[in-house]
Image (cartoon, rainbow, N blue to C red; front, side):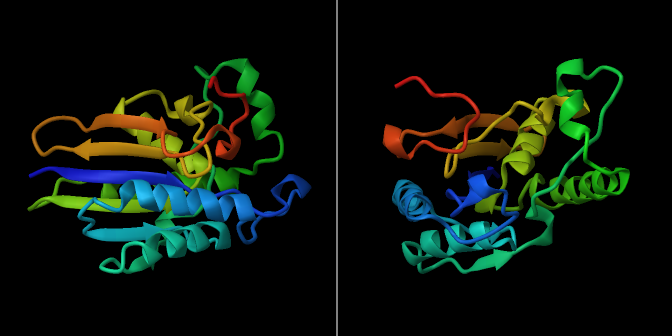
Length: 200
């Protein structure tokens, strides 16, 4: 039976540019969440799970307003994290990213994502459509896992605020990436959270 995971990065955080580790959504972030909710309103969701951080929880709450049949549930497996550390095969251009990251943070992130893959990227007994509202690095790790890519390859796999990634989990074959960072529901002025400008 098909099991679909719909991965949504949280909406834009208020004052994120000032280095705040967490906080509520900006007005633009709330609009992003409303639009991705509209985009997904016809999906027969089985469950909705979100990171406990404020920006993800608020995004999930806004989405749930348009999907009254699904109750959002917090999951510590969807916390923002650093899923792996430097490896010998990692390009040197990424080394500076890990300058202030501790070994404890890396180990915690690695363990979290091992558990998250086991929890969410598993075949289902019946048709399932699960929505996960989480963070950039977590989604990057799921995509890396689908392709069985090197551990460092989540680096550079960026998702926009309220971008949509869909993965199909299969029982007898590897999982399939259906779409990655789909922004069709967001007008250009709401496509935020990416390190590079997107073509129109």
